[in-house]
View (cartoon, one colour):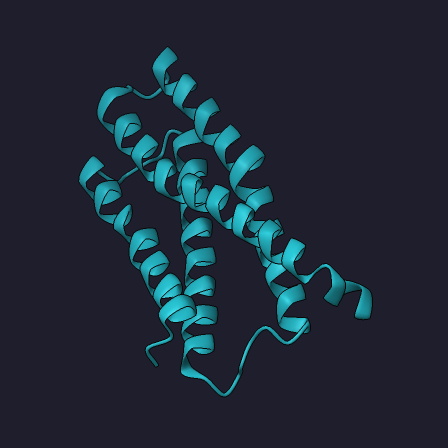
Length: 148
């Protein structure tokens, strides 16, 4: 535990970098879905191109970034970074769980596109694109400002 404490700042830096990468994907993937649903006919070359982009974004960037963000966050929790008696800590953890749920929802939508079974409109994906933004605001305010 002492060894990890010596690397706390590095762990926090890795956590922040992973969160930035994860958030970039969470912001971009719904936008890809908007373009996919509005511009690509099922089975077309453009449909295939969007599917490759969506898959790579999820598997190469978003999934690893989420795993690293969670791992580094859990290590920091283990090192005492959370004050479990404070509301801000609970707001953050529940928001991160919701963010993970949003990630899972997006991954499920990718599978629907891959199967040619998307039923949602570009508008639905535009609206969903706001979910990670709202959660990010909650997390940053909870951790930095700690108003509660």
